Amino acid sequence: MRQERLAFILDRLAAHGSVTVTGLCTELGASPASIRRDLQTLEDQQLLKRTHGGAVGAGVTYELPVRYRAGRHDEEKARIAAAAVALVTDEVHTIGLNGGTTTTELARRLAALGRPLTVVTNALNIAGDLAVRPSIELVVTGGRVRPESYELVGPIADRALSGISLDVAFLGVDGVDAIVGITTHDEVEAQTDHHLIAAARRVVVLADGSKIKVRAFSRIAETAELHILVTDATADPAELDRLRAAGVQVHVA
Image 1 (cartoon, one colour):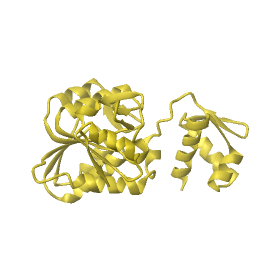
Image 2 (cartoon, helix red, strand yellow; image 1 turned 135 degrees about the vertical axis):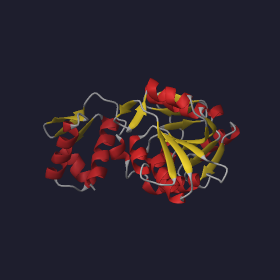
Image 3 (cartoon, one colour; image 1 turned 90 degrees about the vertical axis):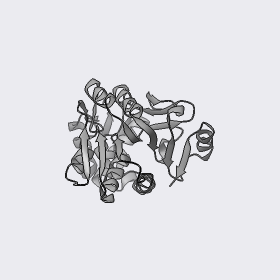
């Protein structure tokens, strides 16, 4: 699929700094014409610079935009979301969600429960999904749009979150490390996520195995601020043991 090819190309740029049409054709089994069109699409979005026979990085950090992350680790994210929705017991009435592909999957499952819930989110795509669900009372924070994640971040979002109280907050993150805590690529997003955590009585982190034992640029919260981690069987077992030792309940979906 084309979206998967685009994500693959950006992954290769993040790892190596450059790609070639010939190499991508071999790895992806696609024609040179298809690869050239893919490179042109990504250049139009200022995510790379085309060269003779390939492309180089465009001087950006390669946090994949959410539209390209969709489709990666799909099975794991579905299992994580299914395990997470099971944590929404009858005593849970107010829920916070930040942006991300796993929290987006969880949002759909929350709507499918069909019981009254108040959901607070700073993610535009999640808000769009939930706005038409009659069982969901939706609250959107406001703030500056972060195009990579469709999230509303910054002081406006922070002020909105500081004035509410939630039963549980579900967070998608870019890294989970027993020593550092949970992290993301953007410092402004990290600050807004921390306000979401501060508003909640219980904090649940959703992270597939590729995020475990990873440290991204900006810390959202220390490990001591987390209550539950929901991950999958590909996660590093030793790191999960360290998280358990630090007091985090670990659910492996």
